[in-house]
Image 1 (cartoon, one colour):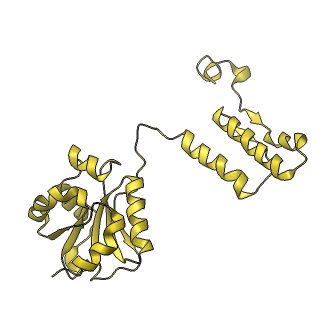
Image 2 (cartoon, helix red, strand yellow; image 1 turned 60 degrees about the horizontal axis):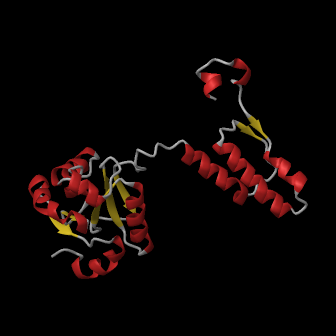
Image 3 (cartoon, helix red, strand yellow; image 1 turned 180 degrees about the vertical axis):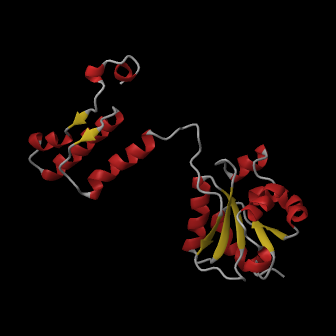
Length: 210
């Protein structure tokens, strides 16, 4: 690939065609053949195969290739993140809580899953922290009371219109931001649990707000 692109050797600068389906020539068992076809396709994907001819179209055979393709071109220096905005979990109304987390994909999907699986209708702000988790973002200054307040304004979330309680819930690991958040936003700020799995128990004791 370096020779073809950087050195201009045109004889090897064309797309690479691979044929993983040859696994069916060496295996009589179709399940075993499909397995080894997937293995070969994975190897060719890692070694920059451009075009591949495969026989199996079963999801279990194709999903590994899709995963490798999506992963191999991901910059490991850049955290995986979601779009920073307010997401609706379930069917929230004006009495529903408003939670805050970061836009680090693992953190967001963990919190969202815990909320959805427990049937908690709410709003969830994924704060733009450049893909950092809560603890790291608070320590590094990517998540501050002012930043969270500004994020709500940026996405156009008006508490006076969207809620009847004017209250926001920060994650437990961001408890130190409570005072700054109250000063910056004028909202009532509650501190949730450090682990989103404990939100249902926290809700029983702390929601609705007094």
